[in-house]
Length: 212
Image (cartoon, rainbow, N blue to C red; front, side, top):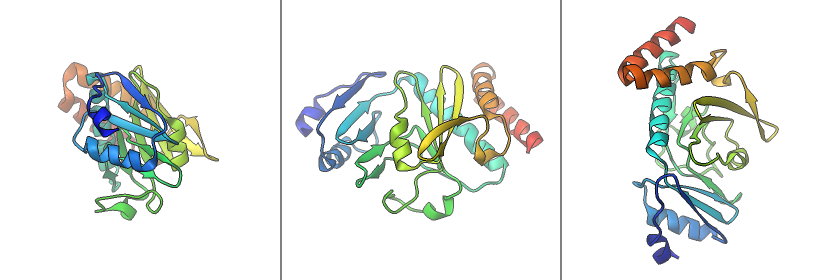
C-alpha cells in the first residue's frame, strides 16, 4: 500500500479515492505522507480521499483565516488557530483536515497542547473550508461535533451551525454576535485583491472597531 501510495501523483485541483482502508492503514498513510505536504486527506468509514488544492484555494484559505484572526483580536477573544491539523476519532472511524480551524469557546481546553485526540479533547469551535474543486465533507464535521462550519465557494460565505447533529445555515455566527460576516468577509477578500492585503486588513479592523 505504501509503495503504491508513493507512486501516486495528485495534480492540483484533483483527488484520489482509496477504499477499504483500515484505521491502522490510515494512520500509517498519514505518517508516510508527513505533516509538511500540499495534499489534504479525509477519512470516512474506510474511504480515504487525498486531494491537492489549487493556488486559488490556498489564497482564499489564508486571507479568510487572517480576517478571522483579526476579528478575534479586535474583539479581544482568546483563540487557538490550528490550521489544517488532522482531527481524528478512531471510535467513529472519521478523520479530516480543515482548511483552517479555531478553538474559541474551548481555547483554554487545548491551550499549549501539541497533539489532540477527539475521543478526549473537544473539536474546534469553528472550521473553515474553501470549496473550489470539491465539496466539503459536512457529514464528517457533523459526526465529529464541530459546532460551526464556514464554507466559502464562488465568492460567497456560508455559515453553518450544528443543531441536533445536523448543520443549519444561519445569517450570523454565534461566535461573533450580530456581525453580518457573510457580506463583509467576501467584501474585504475582494478588496485585498484590489488594494493589497495589508491595506484591506487595516480597513477591516477599522470596520470591526466601529461595529463592536
